[in-house]
Image (cartoon, rainbow, N blue to C red; front, side, top):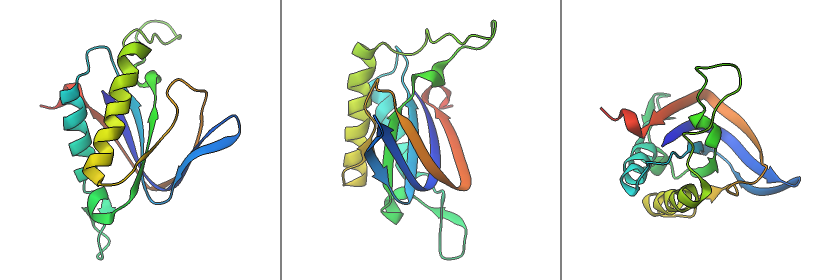
Length: 150
């Protein structure tokens, strides 16, 4: 799994010109799932994300996590994070999981985030044509790949 985590002042996702999810301050997560991702990847990644100390404390130092700030999370499926770009100019998405694999993992990722944050988190619609808007805070953008834990 690859996650692009963005600290945001606000974010929303639209489908058919209707906002389906929106958050204020918190995290926007773009999540790419590959064919060999597992529930272990979900657990490790969710724990890593909710405990990232990337929010400012009273002294303006990035020292607090999303849990400590009680901020919201918006997760968007993003198969293009697994694009292969070595050959030619047209990316290959062969490493992206097929929907029958990716959908249950995506849904379980969201459930795990709900559990760890002890509240409902927000999401896009898997496979839908979505428009994502955000106001990046900082900007702070972090990429985490579960295949690069060590």
